Amino acid sequence: MRKLFVLLMVSMIVMVSSLVYAGEMVSGTKNVTTPGEAVALESSRIYGKSIIVKADLANTGDIYIGDEDVLASAFTGVALDAGEVWVMDAQYMNAIHIDATVGSEGVSFTYRK
Image (cartoon, rainbow, N blue to C red; front, side, top):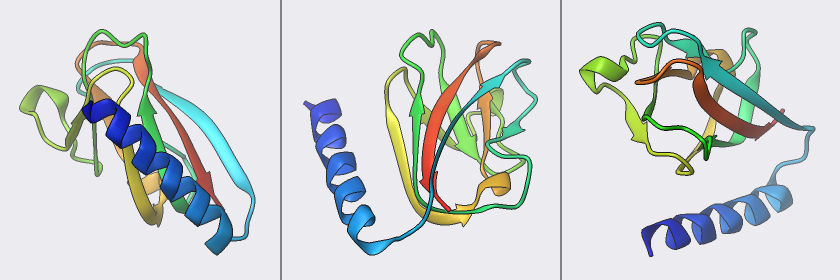
């Protein structure tokens, strides 16, 4: 039930965002090669709006989202199970980092430039 609610909320946010924000839609993926080494969603300073991050369905561990100090082993940041979604209004994409409890797992993301 919780995942259905989150999916409905994300759908509503995307629909409203498409009416409010003009701009190029960008999608990507990011994996954490080595747990304990946080990686930025984007390497350059791109301002993203209507940011949606989804933990890959195939993940067997948790993904943690936060700043450059996010650390899965210390449980810092926001934890996502496989398939869960995190939404943020706006942020510089290189300021959003992920870490994983299992190597080579990650997320897909979408935002407007």
